[in-house]
Structure formats: structure tokens, C-alpha cells
Length: 257
Image (cartoon, rainbow, N blue to C red; front, top):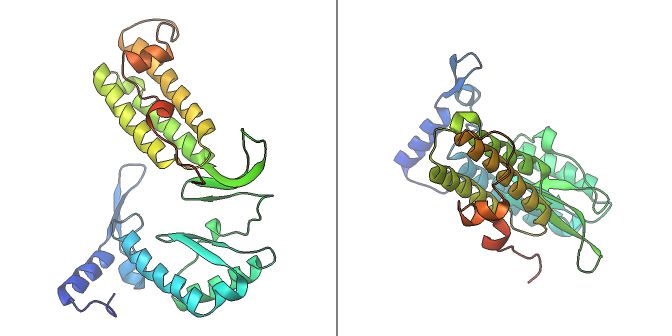
């Protein structure tokens, strides 16, 4: 940043933020502060509000260096990144060399590669996950032909279902019915607006049915009714209680215009 910014107070503020201790709460409730970034003289706080911006600055140097040094043209390898998450797309037979070049450049930039998230994947035989989506072979329900595309990762589907379950647990029976539906709609709307690119039908159906099932259970417990979820059909949840119906409200983004 100092190469491009001459504002001393701003640079000082950023440095103070980087060196600030991180407070973590352990399982027993005990709080512990660490100053690893200050001690090591490198790194940014994980999950910090400024971390994505600083990651973009460093990744810009990496992406520009990849092009200027000729790796993109020589290996026919193209980088797609968001903040510090990235994939390198290349032709068969070039992946190992591209990976080696990437590691060498990261060392020169004094950046540490996350080995747990780094691997070689071959499409269409395999799949890979990026920004919450899983990319791999899909089959068109219209033509029956296969193609390479994204769909919401199973991990993300399970995460939103878990959150819906927590929101409709016994501990949330104190909420008003209308307020409960509003909170559910906010979560469902936000999740589906992000995961609306490509093939989302299967994931949306899983999440929608889970939300209906959990809301039925919650309503019966709220009203002290025994039994299952009879009496609260999906249509009633949509029309009477106002639960969002993803397929009717949110428009999908096609892969091809």
C-alpha cells in the first residue's frame, strides 16, 4: 500500500489494525488474546473487515505478474479470483506446471498457500468447489445433453438447512408467528439470491421443503398442538403465513444469455 498511497495517517491506521490483538473465546468461555500478526510481522486477522481489501491488493500483483511474465499465454492458463480465493483454468497436461509456477510466485510475494484447499482437479471427470458452488458435469433436463456448470455445493445447502433448524427450534418459540416468518424469509431470500446461477432447482427444492417442514413443526409447538405437521400445507404456509416460495419470487440467472 505504501508504494501507491502517500497518506501517512491512513497507512498508520492500517498498520495499527494489522497489529491489533485478536480475541477468541474458548469452549469453556475463557477469552484469550493473541498477537500473532504483530509478532510474526505478517498476515491479516482471519475474517477481519479489512482482510478482503488487502487480499485484493496482493492478488492484483499476483494476477498481473501471471500475465506480464507470460504464464497465461505460455500455459494457456487463466486465473479467476475473488479476494484471496482463486482457481487456475488450463488445458489438460498443463496443470502441474501451472501449480508449480503459482507456488513459486506466492513465495516471492511472501504469501502462504493453503494446502488444504489446493489441489488438481480434472473436468468433466471430477468436480471442484469455488465460492460456494460446485463445478462439474451436469445434464440438461431439456435436451439430455451433458455440460460443465455450477450448482450450490452440498456443504452450503446443509449449512442453510442447519440455520433454518436453529431458527425453528424450541428455544425460538417465544417469537411472534409473523416475526418468525419474516426472519425465515430474510434468510431464504438472501441465500437464494446468491445461489441462483446455473442449475439450482435441486438445491432450492431441498431448502424449500426443509423450511416448510420446520415451520410446520414450529407452528404446532407454538400453539401447543400435538401430532405432526398436518393442517399446515405448503400452500397455506405460502398464502396465509407469507412464507417465501423461492421458485415463484426469485429469478434464476442462466449460464448462457
